[in-house]
Amino acid sequence: MLCFKSCFNLPRFSIIVKDSYFESSFAIDLANIMDITTNSDYALKEFYLGSRKFQFVADAVGLPIDQVNFILAQVLALLFAYFFRVFLHPNNVSAASRHWTALSAGLCISYFCFGKQVLLAVLLVVVCYFLLNLLPPSIFHHATLLVSITFLSVIHIQRQFYEDGLFVADITGPLMIIVQKTTTLAYSLNDGLVKNISALTPLQKKYALKSKPSALEYFGYLMNFQSILAGPFFMFTDYHDYIEGTHYIRCESYKKQRLSSIPEEISCNNNKLTEMATSTETASRKMGFHDELKKSEPCSTRAAMHKTFFAFISALIVVFIMPNFPINYLAEPSFFASSMTYKLSYIVITTSLVRNVYYCAWFLGEAVCIMAGIGFNGYDEKGNSKWDLVSNVRYIGVEFGTSLKVVLDSWNIGTMKWLRYIVYERAAKQKTLLTYLLSSLWHGFYPGYYLTFLGGAFFTVVSRTVRRYVRPHILKCGSGVKALYDFLTFIATRLCLSYMVFPFVLLSCLRYYLHVLGLLAIFILPLASPVKERQKGGSKTPESKPINGINSNILKESFGCKKIVEEISQKKID
Image 1 (tube, rainbow, N blue to C red):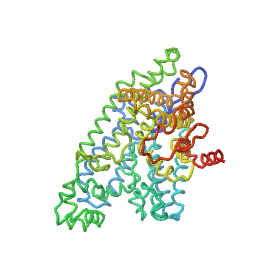
Image 2: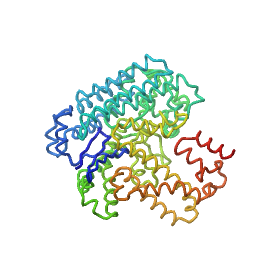
Image 3: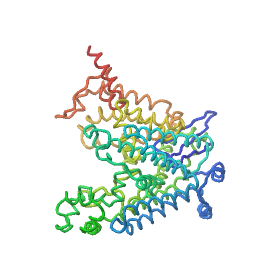
Image 4: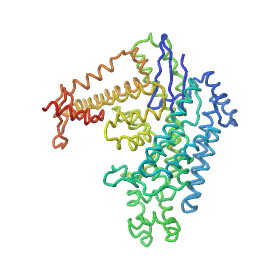
């Protein structure tokens, strides 16, 4: 028996095999829109509050109405994004008009997809806005994180209690994005209003805010149509600059490559241009700045259509190829009776195919932002414009990464940035542990998430250890050996990903062999390969003394237990 439980874009699954209950999940956000069961039909009738005006389309294409509404809403947002960028350009309308339009469109498509549930999102935004204005700057960031995570957790628990085993797209996904935005905004204000700039990290300095946003700016940032449904997550500073029309001028490569074409009497120099970009809209218009800036802006249509094309390809894979590799086959006795090679191959193929559900949704979300003009990140060496400032996923990194770190860094990029900004760069100790804890709470309370997170942490440590102690030897053996090494690490990464997705299924195939191999790598490699072998000549990295054969740098970086490691090291020296 296989039943699906989805929290919008954060699904999980449970399977019953041989009288044992196994529950797992793809914490790297495994999704499923196939094999809709009678439970899902019941869920749509009982819990789904979105519009049913396009039920005839859902019946015609054979998809549930919630997914049809999501796709239609994103396509409509993509079309509206072009209108927003061209006709509501900062040169044509005020920033307030752009805020109102983006906010109104976001509320409309949210109501279309989720019905009255959109009031929950509005309630969370209102509460967090009052916290921001009523509490002192020294504590409102922590209060915002506590209240927003608690609010989201209540929704997670309510869904898990009432809709367990059912597949329904609801407001939980947008709420998760709102939590990311409202917390980063609060912490950015705390950085700018309370902390000394010398105590901030480069990322914190970049996004520190010196003044609180107005109610319109706050609501517009949290509920704009560009990112309300599926992201991507972006910081308030980036969105504010985009609305004001100063996001191009703030990009260094843009100033160097494009603003040189603006007449000298207008531009003067880059510093003057920056001042003009941040000055009042009226003054900028009088000087002719916006007119010239609009002429020199890179067009985002091609980049947006590029993302849309990949979303379309992912949708084709989901519709035509995924059904040939059904996930429910993993619960069949015939699957467990097959050879180990077949089982591993089937699971790797299945997990690779099912990721296309997320690619479809996320690429569409990126396309909407890019079409609207959000995401410009300067120019590459060839002079081509880059539109990767706001991004959900890097396809090449996920599908062809040769290490688990590369894969995880390329997946759900906005969430990784949020976790780094909120927790990892601020925690005094136990950085990794606290980061995983917040990520777990944000995702929900299904046990499978925690199993997968633990597996991800363990195999990340294994991957780091192998890279530190094996790769330096490989690089000395020539390009042929390195190519073989890259191929083997690519295969190992695919296997680890599959193991993280289906731990209980693979435990029946591999038992605990992967765990044993991982532990051997962590404890044996530091003994077999001296630390000096992995340090290149001229490296300034100090060599740490091993603790029971394990280099302390690995423990510090992997588990965030710097203080404990230093105490152990001191005792050994004494």
